[in-house]
Amino acid sequence: MAKKKPIAIVVHGGAGPDSEHIHKNKKGYEEGLREAVDTGYKILEEGGSAVDAVEAAVKKLEDNPLFNAGRGSALNANGEVEMDAAIMRGSDQSSGAVALIRNIRNPISLAKAVMMNTKYRFLGDMGALEYAKQLDIRLEPSSYFITEHQYDAFSKKREEEFTSSDRIGMDQLNARMHGTVGAVALDQEGMVAAATSTGGTENKKMGRIGDSCIIGVGCYANNKTCAISGTGDGELLMKNIIAYDISALMEYKGLTLQKACETVVLERTHKQEGDVGVIGVDAAGHIAMVFNSDRMHRGWKTNSRQQGIEIYDKK
Ligand code: ASP
Image (cartoon, rainbow, N blue to C red; front, side, top):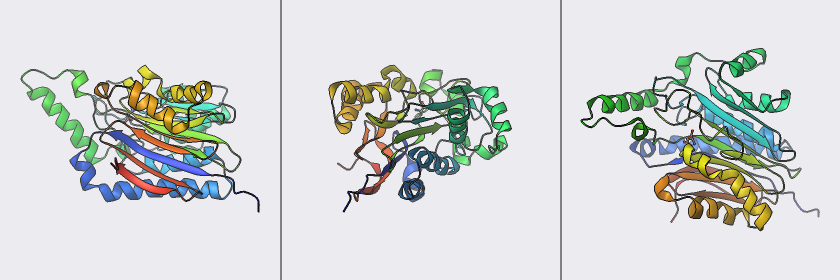
């Protein structure tokens, strides 16, 4: 009998500190992760591409108001939503990214359109919106994206800012509420892909762009090595070029996916500098989920009987 070709999908819903909100909504988070995993896995099982699988999984999480991407995005310091997203295909290193976008229901689909249909790799702000309007990409009014939870978090920070005796600086006000989403997958053709989408950090300065949409940082895919989606403190991920560093350790040093993720996230990045989490898959179907924070929402499924949903560290 011919050996079964490996397929695998891993998704994340952000790495960061624990919170009351997470405990209260644990079931909802788990259901959301499961739905994303199942959606992507079905595509892979039916012979679909890794790119389509990661897009579909991320769309589910963008539509779910519990996660900080699409609907439910964190608000910036002006109380508005500005989203970033990127997608990358491991077979030829094609990629598409969008930054500072508003009113796009599924930023990941716009990133995919940039990858598939344009000669560019990165569109930002109004130009990205203009482009979306030319395509069949669904738009929503600004109110669609703002959930009660994010509005309360925004108001609370505002309140703190105005009442604090020693006026908290913008940096300290910066978000600790990571909920960025991402997916990595391996399809039956042996192709890997990665996708990441976010509302960014809570109370971020208007115009701030995070790691999620930066190829090599919050998103990377290369059939020779792995596909990676990252989450955590964006500025720290950018400092350490997280996703590409993992791939480079595999390519140039021969590290396994798991070892490369651990080296970058647990050894090279210092916990005291901030939160970092990654999910990864390689062309042989190995998967990895490594984070230095209290929790990373994650879900996975492979055809070698690995399957699960977790939020906290098992240890
Ligand atoms: N990395 C994201 C950003 O900095 C936030 C997150 O992962 O929660 O925009």
